Structure formats: structure tokens, C-alpha cells
Image (cartoon, rainbow, N blue to C red; front, side, top):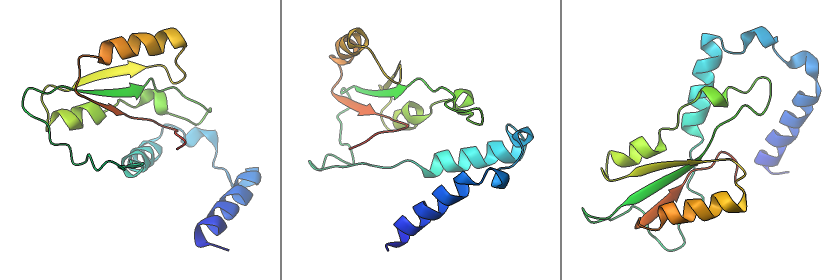
Length: 134
């Protein structure tokens, strides 16, 4: 069995054992916050670049939009709602004309239409996700 599959299997087995979970009192403690920040920082992944568009090579007048989902807590131990998106800020370091656009995690058709209208004047759109399937 592949190493990654073995790790996933062990994790699933561990998750079934509620005795292995720490008490809920650790949620939000400094160590928990530090671990959450480390996990978030290490989780950034480029899914694909089939057209070899990266690194971006934009002219000074070109505009870039960074779209990110509104963060919400998905479980009692989740602290996502306390996290501030920084993807647009990081992109803005290289492209000052970057705009940040936040949308719901599961946008309605009307929200998508509004989003497309707001993004139409931009040259490049970067979409950040917390849970995407390719």
C-alpha cells in the first residue's frame, strides 16, 4: 500500500477513537492558534498550471482580482471564522492594483453573476479555496 494511503488509513482509524481527542478546552488556546496558523500556511497548493501562466508576468496597468470564500467554522473545533484572508495582500506586494473579492463558500447563481460582473474589468483572476476538487 502506498505511504500516503497508509497515513490516511491511520488517520481515519485515529479519528474513530474519541478517547484520542484532546478536551475541547484546548480550542482557542495559544498552542491551538499557533498550530492552526502553521497548518494554514503550509496548506497553500497550486492545483495546476497547464497553460504555464505562472509566475504571472503582468504589465503595470493590468489589474488582478483575488477571489476568496467567506470563512466560517465548519465544526465546533474549527476556528476558520477568526482567520483573516491574506492571499490578496500577498499578491498586492507584487501587483499593487490587486483587488480582493470575498464571496460565500457556496454562492447562488445570482452571486456568481454579480461576481462575474465585478471581475469583468480585471485582466487576471486568482481564486483561493479552502476545499476544492479538481
